Amino acid sequence: MTYAQHPLYDDFWRGRSVKSRWQNLDVPVLEIAGWYDRYRQGMVENFQARERNVWLVSGPWVHGWPAGQPADIGNGAYFAWWDRWLARRPGAPLPAAKVTSYEVPGTGWRQFAGWPPAGTRQLELALAADGTLASRPGIAGTRTFEVNTEPAAGGPGQRLEFATGPFPRDLVLAGEVQAKVRASFTAANGNVAVVVQDVAPDGTATRITQGWLKASHRFGHDRAVPVRPGKTYDLDIRTWPTHYRVAAGHSLRVTVSSDDYPEIDSDAPAGQVSLRLGHGGSNIRLTML
Image (cartoon, rainbow, N blue to C red):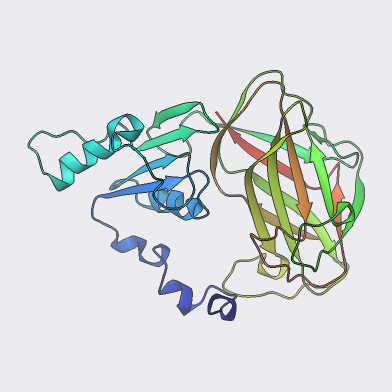
């Protein structure tokens, strides 16, 4: 496969990337993304790079054009765009907002002047040694998981899970969940996958977002930097952006592992990964409305 022959951000990727041409993006653009679309991070970044002439619609769908999608979706954002820029009707208004976003899983459409929306705040939660996600990190500790080298979901010993208690009121995520993972590896490289889930009172788990990083790419994807076995590294892992309402009574769960098959290849070298937890250890940061 051609992609696998280019593990770094090289001329192959630059030649296919809008990111490398942001300075040339000067025409009006209507971006249509989805909060379940695997390319949503790129769509949001395109908007953020050229907010002056880009409008964004992000709905409750995966990649592609879902069958039956009405043209007046998002409070008429499509019609407004077509009337203004395609039909060129005199006096046709622009879309009512720069960002028209569907709050998943089923809350409905919202409109914002930018992304993340104005008024968002940050909440930092520690990955605690006792397996909780908490604002107070607790005592420092270390936990270890085995690297999964098979193309299948990892077993209990191949991941670590951390969870909040039930939330007393709804929690709206609007942006990225950023993870700082302090980890060491027994091998000369490794993958870290972070998956964020909404857990209902009956135990049903729904994936909200995910992010991955190869340890040798910790300074960027244009070069691989060696990993020294046994040394602890601070790994900043961005998850894909989301606009998601966690209902009162539900919890958040964060899973850390070396694998997220079939989303990424199970190509990490065999061995163990140790996470620094609690005080001075790993954490996540939520962007909330």
